[in-house]
Image (cartoon, rainbow, N blue to C red; front, side):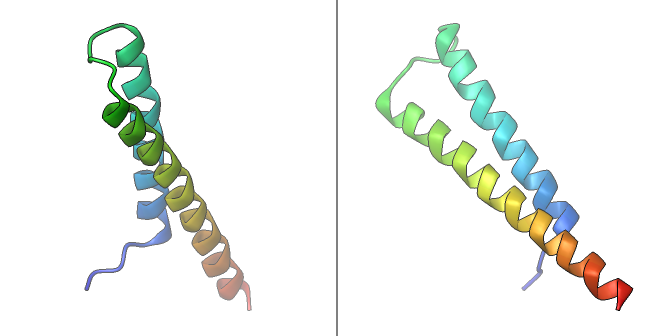
Length: 69
């Protein structure tokens, strides 16, 4: 199984966070129909991006700390 590095995790988290912002914005502009399911998906994508990005930052800090030792 391919394990993504910390930078890839941070980029994935960033993309998911941006998607979590764009989806509600499109719902407000009435480009997308605002449904409970789409609101829930938007929340999950935003929260998942935050968690994945945070894990990437922690892994990046951990790998940088190991290089100094």
